[in-house]
Amino acid sequence: LGARNERGPGVHIYPSVAAQLSIARDAATTEAPRRGSEVIDLGHPDLLASFLDDTGPTERSSTVLLAEPGTRHTYLALRFLAAGHRNGDTTLMVSTKEDQDALRRICSRQPLLRDTSMQDGDFAPGFRVLYLHPEFISAGKFTWDFLQQTLPSDGDDRPVTRVAFDSIYRLGDRFPLLEHQHFMIPALIDILRYRSVTPLFVDLVPPGSATRRSAFNPAPYLTTFDNVFHLYLEDDEGTPRPYLRVLKSTANEFTRNSIPFDYERS
Image (tube, rainbow, N blue to C red):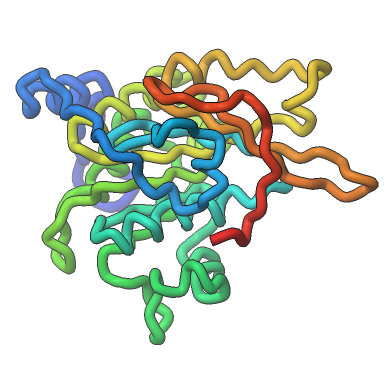
């Protein structure tokens, strides 16, 4: 157990990450829900363009988008959620980069995201947004607060079934007690699976990560996520162009070739 009292009088008690994982397993009688059999809409057709034979990511499979600086990864995370929202999912955008006002402005100005917001400027029912302020909290409290947002709320009695987390890059800079807490993200992925949530995580990788000169090593992601996408930039006559490649997708067939990526394709 852990305790903190920064937010007012009293002591707040919460389980450790390991305890939360154990609780989730017990609640599911130690059997994780099976991944779906149908390919899901990831919000952008280019994310599925590399897959063959009608295969691709399914419900309850975990996905990470490894994005270079300068790519529009936040926009893609929002499109992932918008696709689920149109399909009837209750969705949650968790951001360490952009607060609610910034995300609201993005959604209201992008034609493909406008159904996630209402005329009064608020987000549409079932489209939840959580901005994570920098805090001095432990991994257990961080995970607990995150997961509480996936539960039914007063305004929406349905649990969240699709989550995007933008981004998990150097969380220790914003949350000092998360430094070297490498167990937290794999545990969080498992807990979300036990809760039948389909997650998309975003992490940032160094510029030039697709070249052999780069020291970028995707191995930690390949051992953690079901699907690993790599979004990077290549210089084309002085203009950076985005490309996408699939590094891993469990039980799916896909080409290893990179494909040009068009952010506005629908």
